[in-house]
Length: 436
Image (cartoon, rainbow, N blue to C red; front, side):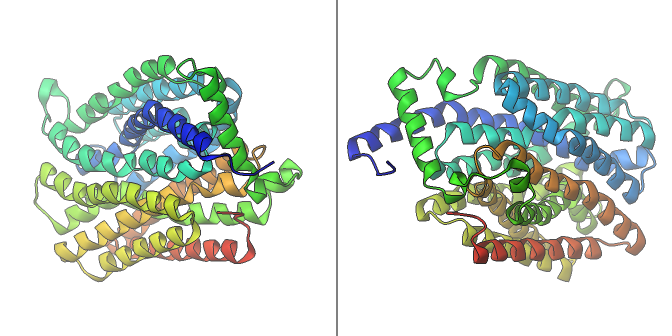
């Protein structure tokens, strides 16, 4: 029943997979660019906004934490809603509401109004990342999922690479029409999400069965390929109670992995401009933006290569572990020197490692969980990451205010990466991650 089809059928299936890729991969990539831009632009706005709104490092960290509280509360319900209503409805809903909410941040006049605005942005964006990862599992067979996930997630470093210099340029609009540069930042960078939300409604298709751009033979070939590869994943064939699976050791290990990973990703996204500013005191916003862009640009180039190599080898765990270790080495470099060259090397290693780890890691849940548990399971794993996003900015901000440096906050990120590596090793040793 699970025997491989002949070469001709495999070739035809591969053509359909490539056709799906040419239709969806680039579009999902663009959507994530603007999702990530609306999430991280506050980190660059902080260079001027913090003084305007009288924010300490702790209060700024709290603003990011409150964003993640909103995201956390609505992440699982949002992902379940996507499974129920379909991506064609739910992804545009997310994008339009988060675009409006992000623009609304420009009207903050103090800590409280900023907290309210960021909470609303978090609620609006909740479920986007987990929802797209679930959507990818509907359209791509396991053998192609690592590459596609890697390309999609490469949008995060690409966003930093172009978004940081862009944000620096927008900040130079300070005073135009009496509006502060950081307020222009939220306005200009929020509008594309509104436009893309409308486009997504007309462009996305919920599942292969509904795709008018595939003929009946292509639909069947794609569905056969996805189902055949799913049946070869041991964990996907185990029939178990849903709640039991969602509370299993497998889920705990996956959540721990993402907890440590997102701690580093959050530290990178929220604090890197200020870490660089600490080393380049007196530099212009644009210069800081360019420096921030370098590690992200290198990560964007490496990420798809790393995940494609994982696909070719058919191996996930060691690719993820080595990426986590590379990120940990990067934090060590940042901690041990305040000199710009070594810090830039460290930030680059951290960016490359954490982004590569994210690309490989997110191929694990669909292999380790049954198809029935995947929607809620992926949302729960994402929620563990949101807990890290929620706590990390506040922890780093508190440490920064208490010590006057980022040494302790970076050390916290390093420790959490070690936790992730441990969880991966346990999962591999016990076979919890199935055929991954």
